[in-house]
Image 1 (cartoon, rainbow, N blue to C red):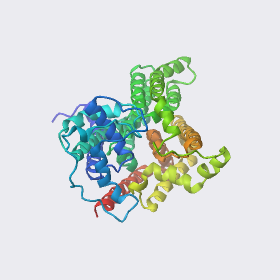
Image 2 (tube, rainbow, N blue to C red; image 1 turned 45 degrees about the horizontal axis):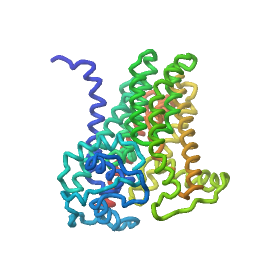
Image 3 (spheres, rainbow, N blue to C red; image 1 turned 120 degrees about the vertical axis):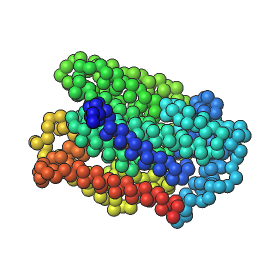
Image 4 (cartoon, one colour; image 1 turned 90 degrees about the vertical axis):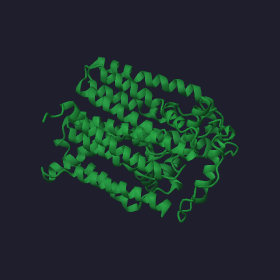
Length: 462
């Protein structure tokens, strides 16, 4: 019997990971109740606006948000159980607006997602149109499957990033599995949310950087980086926060001492930076209105808050810090009640701390490239947190609303996963050459992910 070509064998692992992500995502897409993802009504309305009317959302705040059928579903599926964890999901078999009546579908598209770029929403239009004559719930599920596909693409890119960075398909498999079973990544990639595309573009960007590091003279990886970063900017505005990180990482991958490396890195990132600037100019009136009056007709005044008071109350509060950067990174979404039991969050925190201890104990034994990766990840994470807090401080002084969430760090998940592997490998080398704690962490995350799935099922259907 002839053996499969090496290229085919190499493609089997990421393909299996992508299939696992597709199966997991499709399961969640079918069982997570409608409109229980972050801002899902707004994201779905954006898709409907493009599909039904061929237009971007109207950049206005004072408007009737969402279509008639979307508002009817919100009243049926969300209102009865908001902040009521003792209630299960109500029966959704109620009479709904006629899906073929244009008045049911009419929408301006304005709302929380109106200022977002259109890439994710445009990618969902074919799925929406394929079920255009179906009831709203079926169209919602079809669009959710687009998020599932983006999630599978992210997992594929995570595998490539790990395999190229560590020169090991086994390491790529570990990084890919972590992407499959990260509960928050999986949840956001199975509901209607542009974060699904954001994560895929971020993972593809880091995969391109990993290849560029191995092939610094090749053009292909930098072209791929340019495409991935432009797509990321066109997926969600927050991707722009990470452009300096990707630029710095590109310079490091190509060689810091070479002047040509700086020019090539700038050329790779420049299209995304220009795209971000152009989109910001386009949406600036609505963005300023959101800051000035985010609640539409209900005005909310800003807080008379100095920097020191803000730091004391909202940054250096240990419980709040833990909730934002640990709980909200792994799995939580407010009133949707997808929170895990506190014990799981403590376990994940301890697991990450253990990897950090491994890095500190085995710093001298780490390869230079891995030490550079750890430094890059730590600096990039600190930079992103500082930028988000600075933006939140300005917004809170304007309208009193806080918005910082741990999930906004998930574009850095490829680096975080690789950092965890470095820490566990260093720890394993200290304990025993036969022991790889990285697989123990994978098993831990698998169990936590299953707990998250069961939490969703029992919360809404038990």
